[in-house]
Image (tube, helix red, strand yellow):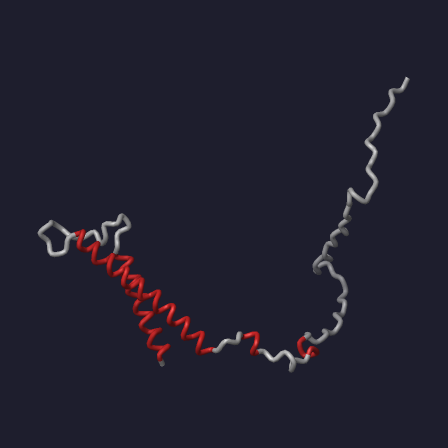
Length: 143
């Protein structure tokens, strides 16, 4: 129940944080509205309000994320998912797919697909174990 309440608060904080960040101007002016210096909400005041609100919501976001992680870890126990699998009871013969019946060869027609191309077998040449090749001698001029 506590986890559900914290998760609901966390979602609300996330949505509010997204909204506050999107309201801010990228130039640092924050919100961009305001008006004259006699106005109720000046550009500087709007920036201060949005900056403070962002800091508060960001701090709440990190605290709630940490609390949710710790509570979920304690609730599920210290074992991992791999520890819960009972490998001793598994039957290896059931894990392998059943052998398929051999495919019957169909007569070859002009509409059938061509046979797949076989790649040549790669040969590896090791210069340390093979004798060095003699450089080609220039041919002697004929008289």
